[in-house]
Length: 528
Image (cartoon, rainbow, N blue to C red; front, side):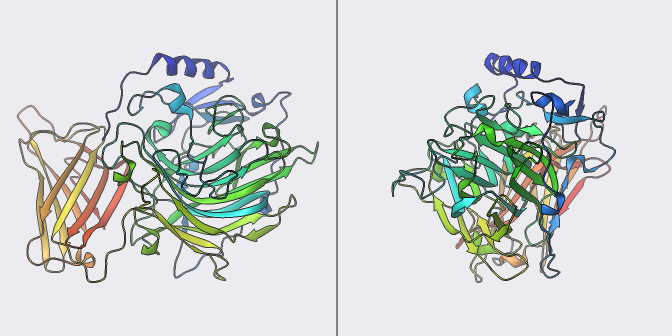
């Protein structure tokens, strides 16, 4: 894992101080996940103080739940009514946390997002061998036409990034792009992302992004993430770009996600157009269409993409094992690969919706590389999922006959270490009985804060099929000295991988902030 810098660069500090001076902050609060929210009067965001009218709530898609394959809505950080908020009439703006940056980060690197430059395979001037910006991978559902918005359901997962450890800030995203190419490439984007530098942790967060200038510059009314720069107008007092998502889907278990809707809507009072964005059926806010060219996103989009993006900062990105979605490739299917369902396109300014009918593409991060991520489309399926697809990687489904004789545990420690005089074990339950492995012996070197440790063990007896790997329990044993209290250990993430002659297969992956806190009174974590 890359080292977290403790010192913020003067350039970033100066930018943040200048940004903060532009906000009329009434109150500052902290969310349960550690986000700092500055609450500002809603009218202070626009000249003249008049906020646009949100589209009708009945424009939201009606979800139909399949009892055989249920999809639940994930909770968001401010869903809990006991979480502190600002006074009436104010809205939350996330304050950037530049004290938790990974690697050597310039102001330009911190603000930019260039992955969408070449994501459209039919963009003007595209070349057959033209790769993505170096380090970026995509697996995308594409459709060309005239679009005034889109909506969909995105499964939320907790992909592991920085695998193996990279010198910069990797990220993993499921998202949409609404783009236009009139005079210059312009884009409005949104979805969920795992990005340490942007969010201050490695858990999924809602995001939005826009560019007015082909990703060449970020700044007020030019482009940027969330509300790092002026341009985005916050409307909701409970859902905002940057908000943390509580919980994630699990392999073979419960599937959860978020709904998103993007709608170009004409303001009834003055006829002005705004690009509105909703999450979980709540209008978050909007981008004024006046930010964009009148012949481009100022009027409509001409390309719509939905899919996954991974960025690796390795010198050779082809070596990355960063996960897209769940980490499983699309062919793994239900409860394993990431699902995006009910993808629709808005076909006019009146809000008319039609099922997406796109084509699949994937691309590489280097000119001669391959793409370890893929996508499988099911357009106009006739099911309750409408047009849907699976997407992800790099793990391919194991052959039905594959067996595994080794197991690897990769554990990221969070903000409370595993002491040197403590020990830790992992137990896996197989049909033939439980097997316990020593992750860390007593008096072995401690596992420090924000460190990642990997241990590989041989499975006793014959090699086992993937289906034989049952419940997994991580246990802390505290060997307290005379003046010591019981140890506490924060597990930030856990990945368990089976190894065999057929290759590797993921048994479990999970993360949180933390995933679990093991203590003297609660020393174990059990996952399935």
